[in-house]
Image 1: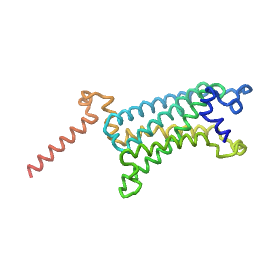
Image 2: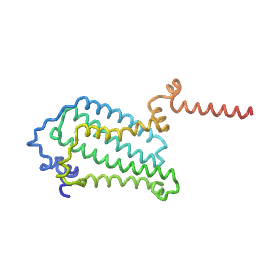
Image 3: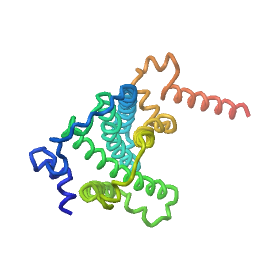
Image 4: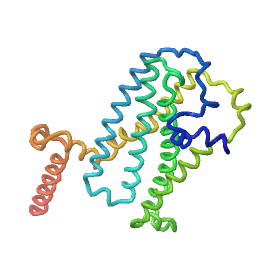
Length: 257
């Protein structure tokens, strides 16, 4: 239990922003990292791409009446956590890979980014479960658990996330170090795991823009002015025109009959 706290972000903060000297001692560590410039460029560029798309989606949701729904409140929190994760699994990873850095190259930076990334990943996993339960309640109104998403109760439900993340972040050593030290992870497997983490959070904004028509239209309205939309016939204006045309044609057909 004491070792867990000494390796935690709380100890780092209360220790004048310094990692524990016994567990994170770099005085006799002269390991040199391997420079990975192509991977570094990929992670940085893809991370910026994810951040831009995700930020646009969140702005579109925040400026609309979608936030009245408990579903979109949960999606907003998930988006914030995913964006924070992207700083760790994409931008920081790309920078460190480009530099060929080891832990002792930037001990404070790596410790903070790793702790924040781990906590946000744990929190986003819980939020995904809550979002799945919320969707099930909308599909089946007879579920008794539906009441937890009514009104302000949604904020209470998602308020469990910080408690869950902090507890697992502080006490996460569920295995013995001697057993863990015998495991070997090849570089390819580590890269696959990193890519899976990156796109498990980053692909959400892509899914929003492809599948969620409401968010896609609002993002288009943010990026393209009304005049340009009229010229190239895209976005909400096109849909409104099509709906109006269909209504007029339907009314004409009914009058003729």
